[in-house]
Image (cartoon, rainbow, N blue to C red; front, side, top):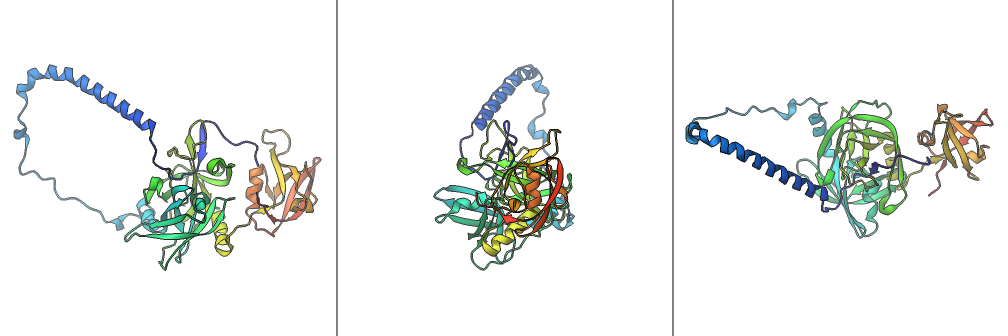
Length: 396
C-alpha cells in the first residue's frame, strides 16, 4: 500500500446523503444577500428622488395594456425527437434501471443509489450504502419512472475490499436491468452521464466527460475506520453529490461503465464526503464491479487475488529502478512459494509493467484466485522471473 495519498485542502469522501443539519454558510449567504439588497434599495432612493421631476411624462399603466394580446400557440417537440445518444435519450433508457436506496438501522440512516442487474431483483450498489443495515435494519428500494413504487430488499453479499454490494428486492416484481458495458476501452474525454439520487432527489441526471482514468483515491472509513483505497477509479466531472453512491455512470450508448462511489470536496480535513460537487467524482470500473457482483450473487462473498506481500513504491522520483519493493513476504504466500524475498523489486506482472504498488494491485485484480501468472522482478540488479499461483487475500 502507498505510504501517503493526497491530503490537505482536497478531501475525499463517499457521496452518501447526509442527515439535515444547520448550514452556517447558508446563513452567511443569506446575510450577505440581505446586505446587498439593502445596498440596492439605498442606491435606488437617490435615483427616485432625481426622477420625480419627470414623473408627469410617465404613461399610465392602463394605457400600456393590450386586451387582445396573444403570444401564439406553444411549439412543442416530441420526446421521441431526441437523438438516442443525447443526454435525454440516454436518460429515457437508463432511468428505469437505476433505483434509490434508503437504509434505516440502529446505527443510523442514509440514502444512496443502485443499478438493476437482473430482472428477478438483483441490484448492485456500494458497500458503504447498505453495510449499516446489520440484523435489525431495513433497506427500502424506490424505482423511477411511471408507476414508481417502493419495496423492501435484503443483502445478498458485501465486499468492503472493493466497496461493492448486491441486494435483492422482495416479491415478484419484474425489473428492467441496465445494460452493462466495458470500462477497458474508455478514453479520457469520452462523454458520460451520471444517474442516481443525490440528496435524496430520485432520478437525477447529470452529464460530463471522463476526466482521467486509473486514479487511486483513499476514502475515509465510516465512524473513523481506516481509509479504504479505491484503485483504478474513473474520474469524471459529471456532478456527483451525497446520495449518488451506487448509481450508474453510463457512456454515450447508455451502457453502464462505472458505479459512482466517491467525490472530492474542498476542506482542511476529511468530512465524510458531505461536501457538494466540485466536478471531481470517482466511479468503480464496471469490469471489476461485474466480476465482484457475479461472485456475490453466487456465493455471498468475493475473492481477491493476492501474492502475500507488503510493498512500497520505488523509483517514482527517478532514482533507481521503478516498481514495487517487497518489504515483507508472508510465509506460505504465493510469492514465498515462488522464491521471492524481501528486498526484491517487482517490475512486471504477466508481461505488463509495474510502476507502483497501486499498479501491482490493479494488475493482480485482472486475474482470478488460482490463476498462474509470471512475475518479473529485480534482485541485486539482476532480472529474474517467477511463476506464481494467485491466492485469496487474507482478511484484514
